[in-house]
Image (cartoon, rainbow, N blue to C red):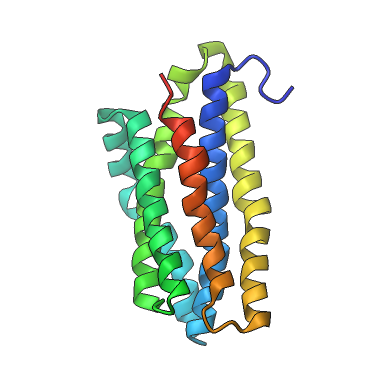
Amino acid sequence: MFFGDLGPEFKKLWASRTVSNLGDGMTLVAGPLLAASLTRDPFLISGLAFAQRLPWLLFALVSGALVDRLDRKRLMAAVDFFRSAAVGFLGIAVLLDYASLPLMYAVFFMVGTAETLFDTASVSVLPAVVRKEDLAKANGRLYSAQILANNRLSPGFGESNAHAAYNARWRSRSNFARPYMLRLIAFNFVILPSVCPLE
């Protein structure tokens, strides 16, 4: 069995991290495709992925220090609320045709900065969730879910929604907004209930 005897608290952590990684992957794919509908400059389009990954270079050490000093479970909930709100705001801007490259750069940078905190905290909280002898197995489960969600499943979801928007040529770009709105919904119904009850 996938979870084995890792316990219910690990299942909650695994669910919150997996859904969060699905949202990250969808955003990373749908964002540049949305940017391609706003500009034809490949440098500006590729800059979105750079803006989302740059915080790892700038803030990884600071995030680690903060995670060590704060309540990790509450931090995870607060950070993912912030990420979901930022992405939801971008989704609303897309629906209302107010999306712009500066807005997208700002949102992607903020989401990437928050991701450094969430991912660091989700690994650091693991010893409080599983027994010491299960740490290697639990870490493997978390990282396999991260790779599957971030690199395999979510890009297809993000790309299919953006592709549908291109083909439909919807003025409102409602299909481009779908990945961002799904992220906001996932936070409210999966991530928040999963992370907050951790004891």
